[in-house]
Image (cartoon, rainbow, N blue to C red):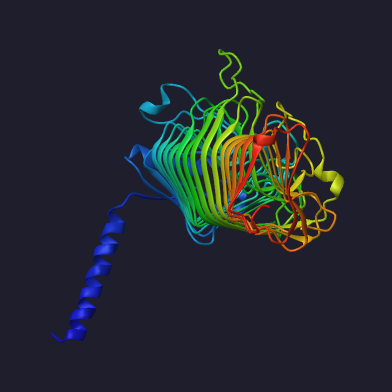
Length: 535
């Protein structure tokens, strides 16, 4: 046999083996159960019959071939894959009566009880379920454009394990596009989400889940895009988000608002965030709110968060961190939660341009500081245009308010406003403004143990100091080279200020290095090894 014939024979054997393997699989074509692809015939019972038969036979694949399949709520079962072929559309019914009908799950997971939920695809207490393929899930959410009340989500899975969501296009839910609640081992990869049809159009919600991988996704939503929540006392933990393109009229990547259990061991990397380009705003702002929003306001604990290699363009606020005390209850049998904790956060290699003039904020509460936050290799470009009177603005605590990056309005700093923080590192932070801004670049109030290393920020004519420190303790400022024309580098205020060190800075372009308010102890500020040397 010649080499060419041998190769052909080998290829044929492989194809035959593949065909045999496919034939051996349990594949349930919804057409065999009466489904019609005209987009008008309601196929809910046919699709459900295929899913139930697949599960009863021990599992397999329920196949949606090319065509448009109109449906109300369908319920997944364990060991079932819902496969949407290329050219296939699972089209949500516009009739609310077609949703949330009672369904009794198969097997031991049902515990003899029916389950119902307002979603196009739903499931509870399942193992090894998948929704995959190159087809589309379209919820026709414009039919449910009202606030509050029952509106169908795209996918809702609760108390499930080993979940795979892969490849599908998701469009137009009546509410959140996806909600995974109290699930273990969830993988979401390669999906495309466009959710701008109704109110509360979140893109992807991970709620009190563990061991979650989100990668290679495109999410464009009116409300928050990729969101971690804990609508229970169980935290979201062991979550990775990587290689995604994200856009939102609200928050692009967010932890909160609901934070009963908090967030632990979260890694976010290699993502691009941009202002929405193909939609008009319903909630938030046309350009979007925060790029990165980290929030603990209902008790709970945020701990061990690493975010790196993020680019942003055109959104309002690049970075927002908030420890508040809204104190929403998630267990009605227990008292309201106390203030949670927010610690051990590292942000690195972040570049943002075209952001608004609000500024970034990192704010805890009196007696409840945000702890151990590190920002390194950060480049942020703002619109600027802030006035000198904005620099002296008193920022309210708003302890019980809903957390949002716009909650304080325009901040006293065009770069970072930090209050009630312990353990803060700003390393190699570059700030730029498109228009001259007379506010401070950095304001720290009630901040303890901070390192400000190589801060690079412009100073506008008539502006206040580059840095303002108020009632701070243990602040080390080094490696800074203020721009030519800088009138005042540091303004130190507050009778509780102590142990502030300026060391190894090039201050040759500064008219006045530091100004101390009359109530500041004279020993609060030490200058060493700066250039030019202090006279």
